[in-house]
Length: 81
Image (cartoon, rainbow, N blue to C red; front, side):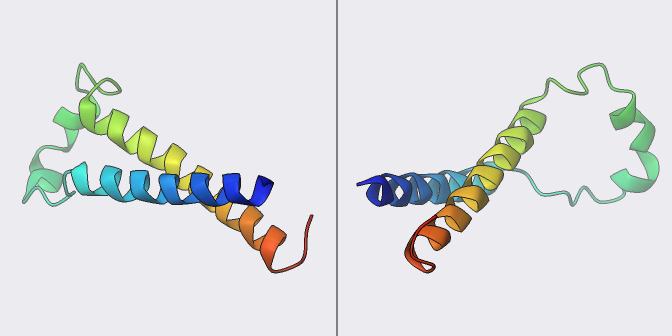
């Protein structure tokens, strides 16, 4: 029963991770790296933009997915914890 819960959580985190990655913008902003670096670094809303929140949630879901996958491997392949 515990294994089924881990499998479902792993699949849901995988789907959430794919959805979060698809919704993010790319880092390709033309010459923004050369000319607009100071504007983004010293911006007023440095940590409150939607893009930064998406990056944070993507990191959290990616870590959860990795932990769940390793845990699932330990349960199924090695024969238990």
